[in-house]
Structure formats: C-alpha cells, structure tokens
Image 1 (cartoon, rainbow, N blue to C red):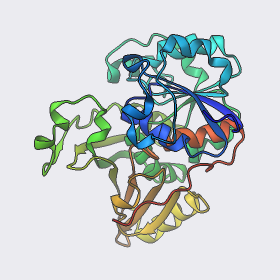
Image 2 (image 1 turned 45 degrees about the vertical axis):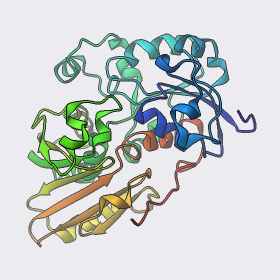
Image 3 (image 1 turned 180 degrees about the vertical axis):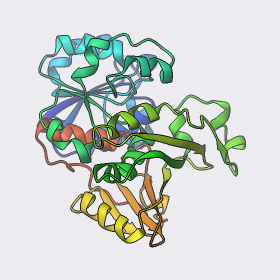
Length: 346
C-alpha cells in the first residue's frame, strides 16, 4: 500500500456494504493511506477478490481484529463498521491501546447517551455505558465545532441523517412543535449484506411496504439530537417504507403552518455555502445523489403549509460519506476532502 499519504487509517468490518463503500471513498482520498482492513470471516483473502470494484485501488488482504490491535500505531483514525451491539465491546478495547487515535463508529452503539432508550430500540443492554458521553454525535452540518479535534465520533444512521437534514433547520428556528409527521422510503442495501426475505429480489422488486411504523430505531437519535436545537416539545411520527431499489433514501416531512417561501428562506440560510448539501424548490430526485456523499433538500407546498423533501444515498451521506466528512474535521483536513463527487444523470 502507498506510504506517501499524510494519515494512516484502519477499517474494522470492511467486507459489508458500509465497509466496502467506505473503502471506495478512502481509496481516492488524497490525504489518507489505508493501512489495514479487518473482516474476521475473510482473514487472508485478497480485498480485491471480495470487492472487485476496488481492484487497483486497495491492495492487500483482510486481517483479523487481533492483528489490527497490534497495528494500531499505524493509524491516525480507525473506522468501525460492525453490526449494532458489537462496536461497544470493540472500541473501548482498541481505544485504551491507542490513546492518540480517532475512532469513528458507523453503528448505532454510541449515538445517544441513553442506555435505557438503547435497550428499547436495539434489544440489548449497553455494555459500555461509561463511554457513551465521550462520543460526539457526528451530524456534521450542525456539529462542526465539536467535531474539530474530536477523538470519538458516532456517525448518524442513514434514516436519521436524512431526517435530521429535513428537520434540524426547522427546529433551530422554532418551527417544530408537537407531533411532526415524516415518511421515508429506503433501498434494500440499508438492510446490509446478509440476505434476508425483505431484501430478496423477487419480493423487493416492483414492491413497496412499510415496516417498523412509529418504532424505527433511528427515532432515538433523531429526537435526542433535535432536543439540542429547540425547547419545544416534539414527537417524531415516522413511518419508514422499503422501496424496489438498492441505494438511497427519500424522506418527506410535513410542515403545517409554514409556507413554501418561508421554508426556502430557512433552508437557504441553514445550508447555503455547504458543498455537500444543496437546496431547491420542488422535488429532488433520488438518482441525483446515488453513489455520492451528497444530499439534496427540496421545499414545496402552498403559501400556508409546506413540505420538505430530503434525499441521500444511505451508503453515502447516510453513512461512509458523512463518516469521512467527520474524519476530515477531526484530523484537520478540509471538510470535503475526497468527497467532491457529483451524482450520475441517469
């Protein structure tokens, strides 16, 4: 692997969809060098054999987590892309051995300082509650000040990111109160690489269904984050849906009492000048962000009532893209380094 970059990084859990997409972005980042990638079920296998899209970009073999422990001194940052309930045992062990390394978690384990809520939504007692307050919630556009120089970062979930993008500007100006109604449709890659019935192509293709209505686990972090922006009592009424496509999330939030002109002003002021978030009037299209670390916000409605649309790629801005954005801030790189990538037109 190249040694001319300025910061070594490691990836724990590199063989899943999140890990694979993380490596795709890191491979073209001009200021990092991927030193090692773990995948305990693929130890010794060439990375490019498992992820042929990265052939010629990422060399080497998958290593074990035990080997990663002995090579922590090669890294300035470590990304952890493990299933929920796993990073809470892995990160403390690694962090104690590498006091100067930045750890960026892409799972749900450290997104709120709420072990009771965690058990409710994730179905398990949290095994590292003293570590919860040490993590910064990495919703970049509203957390830049605390992300600069942060050592422990919890990357928001894909639905949470997309919803936060739609609701944070409204919460910040006191436009959210009471019950807030949101719907969102997501692609099959959000379910992960392990085949299950709900991602089986004959059942997913040409089909739409709702799941976890009013009970999605990302509600925990969304409401916790929004409470940091407003004193209004709010309750997010969220109905997620599974869509017949692989990548992307399309969220619609209803904003009664706030007209489209005012929404355009609020979101223009909130995201104006952001390279990775753009604002428009009308509906964005999912294809504009698929395969990218970008988001598009659309506003529409009448002079009295409005709606906000938010689109992201769950494997881009909804995950690895935002994680790298946060790494850039933590390590002192330009925020969008390695992320200025447009979407395809078709």
